[in-house]
Amino acid sequence: MVFCSPRFYRFTEATWEAFSPPIFVSRGVCHPGIFKPMRGIKVKGLSSLRTPVSDGESHVQLSIPLVEEETGSSSSVQSTPEIEKNYVHRVYDAIAPHFSSTRFAKWPKVATFLNSLPSGSLVLDAGCGNGKYLGFNPDCTFVGCDISEPLIKICADRGHEALVADAVNLPYRTGFGDAAISIAVLHHLSTENRRKRAINELVRAVKKGGLILITVWAVEQEDQSLVTKWTPLNQKYVDEWIGPGSPRIRSPSPFTLESIPETENNSKEHEKDTESLNHMFKGTMPLASKDDSSVQNQQEYFVPWHLPYHRAEVSGASACALANGLAKKDDNKGAVVYNRYYHVFSEGELERLVSGMNNAVVVDRFFDKSNWCIILQKTL
Image 1 (cartoon, rainbow, N blue to C red):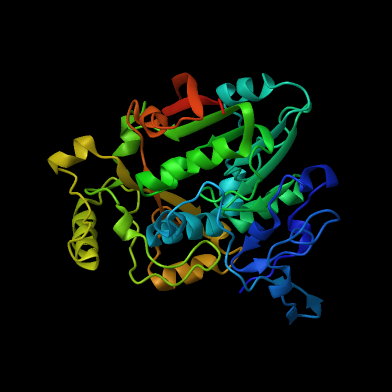
Image 2 (image 1 turned 45 degrees about the vertical axis):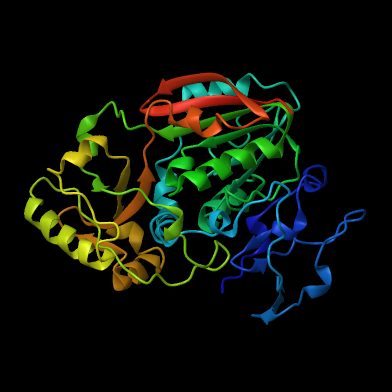
């Protein structure tokens, strides 16, 4: 169990009332300064809270399940699949400082969207990462959230308001914001139902007339040489892959995968690793061979992240990942290699996900820097 210092998160009195207090949970722990009764706010389940003591400090631990969202959802959609726990959540926790050091440039299209918002707008950044867009428009108020505690700590250390939260179960009251952004997030969700749920949550969280910008990686990558360095999966994940647990409790994985290093002469190693992975998955979801004809229509990938050895020494996360087989050393590059799960989107796929929604419409769509992007407007 991990307890985080209150300084990880900052909230003003003006923005506190936008939140649903029972959702301020990270791995089953309610953080001081976040989950607390405010005057005029009734917290459901408050009587079920208890206060364990650790290292001389008091921490409030939530002993009740999360509250059902207004929009409703099956438990299979809200539960986090093992593939996301191991190849999204744990990876970004481990690489957070290095990842953050590479994420500083603002995409022009995102900047244009944020600068177009009316002065005084309250903007939600769902999947804010290191918070590079938080506070971008000084005339707006920004609140960020991300599934990675280390990334949220980086946001807080920079003075931003941010919290740990799941994209498919946002902790905001319905209609709290004037606008929202989801930049390079949905492609980390492994089922179509979870991607739909994340979009529904964004729409739910903004007011009528509110705008939502969503960007995702595209199948149609401008630099196709990058795709050759990715490890393709030859079958889409389905809801049956969703196992027990949630982002609050990241249980050990029943299987492990080794990463495929980005090297030019690794064809034999790739074949060996592919056979090993196929055996681990017991035929349920094997990896695709590089010469498999299905690769041309591929949308599911493991994308490597090389964490330099000198950066991997910052925490024990990499040592644990190596020991558990969730990462691999690449001595040629002097790095620990992690795999990140991606579902890359085809043209029109984002629009199809929102086509059945009766409370939002697509007001713009475009392709930018190998990303498909849409802007939604809430209508009800």
